Image (cartoon, rainbow over all chains, first blue to last red; front, side, top):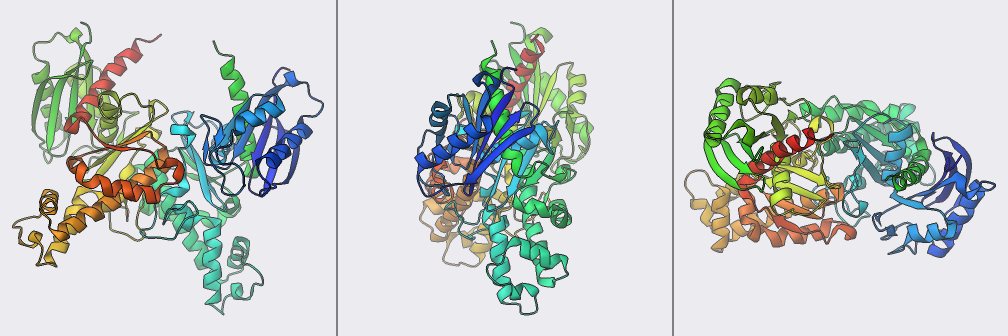
Length: 320
Length: 320
C-alpha cells in the first residue's frame, strides 16, 4: 500500500532510535545505538541515516510516507533548523530537516521531542480522543507539549510548550537554560536526585546514607518503598513540586487531562497521591477536576509522534 | 448594511460599559454606569440590557450582527456559563450567554475578559497581523489571553490563558484565587501598591511616607519620577517581577510579541527598561528577541474584542 509506513526517528542525548511504524502506530522494526554526541553533526546524521535504512530495508520507496524526527530543542520547526542542542555537539543553526531529507530521499517532518511525545500520547496513548491535553515529561529535564482546541500548539518557530521553564522560585537555583528558579531546576529527576544526595549525607539514620556510588532516583524510590523515612519525605517533596507546577499548567492551557511521561513516570503510582493533593490546593476550583494520568507509550511516545507527523505531512500535501 | 454593527459589552467589577462598534473596530456610541456588584445577577443583567439598548437605539435589528460580552472569569465559554465572578455577586453557574441573548433578541458571544482584550489588540491594536501573541493585563489582578498559530487559544471550557496564576514563589503569598505564590500575587497593581505601603511606613526619608490616605500605584510612579529613591526601587522591583513572569510566558506560548495592557501599562515607558533587562536574563536565547509592547486600545480592548467575536459568530454561522 502506498505510504502505509513511516520511519520514526528519536534523536536523544544518549541514544539514537529509529522504528518502522504503520498508520495504526504499531512498531514493526527497531534499531538504535548510542548517540555519538561529541563527534559533530555529520557523524550523528550518518547514524540516523544508517539506522533509518536498517528499519526500512526491503521496502519500496512508495510504501513509505516519509520520516519524522523527534529532537531535543531548541529547534525552529517552521524552518526545520536546530538552533542548538545542549546535549549533542554541532547542531547550532543546523538545517536538520533538509539534510536528513536529502540523505533519505524522503519527506521529513521535524519536531521538538516534547511536542512529538505529546502527539504520540494524543494519537495512540493516554490522550486519545481529547481535544486538549498537556504532556509533561519528567526526566533528566522537564519538557512537554500541548494539544489545544484539537490542534498541536506550536507558536512562533514552533517553540511553544517549554513547560519546564516557568519561573518557579524567586532568586532560585540556576537552571541549565541559563535562567534561575525554573520548574525544571526543582522538579526534574536530576534535581530530585541532587536533593536526595545532599539530604542523605546529613542523615546517617537513612539507608540512603549507605548507598555507594552516585545516588539515583531509583535508589530513593526503592528506599521509600522499604519504609525509609528520609526517602519517603523526599518523594513527598518531589510530588509537591510536580503538583505545584502541574496546577500552573492547568491555568495556562486548560487541558482535559495532564499526561505525565519521562523516567519519573515509572513511579507515577507512588507520586500520584501527593501530586493530586498539591494540585487541589494550588488549582482554582474550576480546574480541580482535571485528571493527571501516566503516559501509556513510555519511551516510544516520541517515535510514534514523529511517525504521525510524517503521515500528516503526506495527507496535507495531498489536499487540494 | 446587514450586520454592519455589533454591541460590545464589557462587564467589569466597577463599571458596566457598552459600545456600538462597526466592522472596522470604530466605536460610534458609548454608554456606561457603575456595576451594581452586590445586587445580584438580575440587576446586573438589567444594567447590561439597558446600556446595550442605549447604544443601539434607532438601529434596525438587521443592522446588528449581534452582541459580544467580555466578562471576568472563570467562565465556561463553551457552555456560555459564568462559573462564579469573585467581584460581582450572583453569577455562580449563571447562564449568561443565554440570558443576555434572550433579553436582547440577538446572538451573543461570551468571552473571558483577558481573551476578549487579546482579540481586540490582535485585530485592531498592538498585535495586528501577528499569528502569535500573548496579551497580559496588569491591573487589580493579572489576566490575559493568547493567540497561537493564528487562532485564539481556548482549551477546555475556554479557560486557557489564566496567566496570572502560574506558581511563582515557593510557599508564597496567598492569592485571591486560593492558591499561593501566584504571579498575580506579586506582579499585580494591587501587590505593587501593598509593597509600597509597607515600605513607605519603614522609610521616613521617602516622600511616600507622607502620603495621606491609601497609597496608590500612581503615587509611587509620581514620586519615582520626582527622584524619590524608595519609589524608584519599588518601580525597579515591579519591573523585575513582571520581566520574570513575561519570560516564562515566552517559553510557554512562544509569541511573536508580548502586549502589556491594564492600568500599569500607562507607565509602560517607566517600566520597560527593567522588564526587558530581566527578560533577557530569564529567557532562553532563542526567545530573547521577542518584543514587549504596550497595548494600543487601552480600556477599549475588551469592548473591541467582544465586538469582533459577535461579527465572527455571524461569519461562522454563514459558512456551509
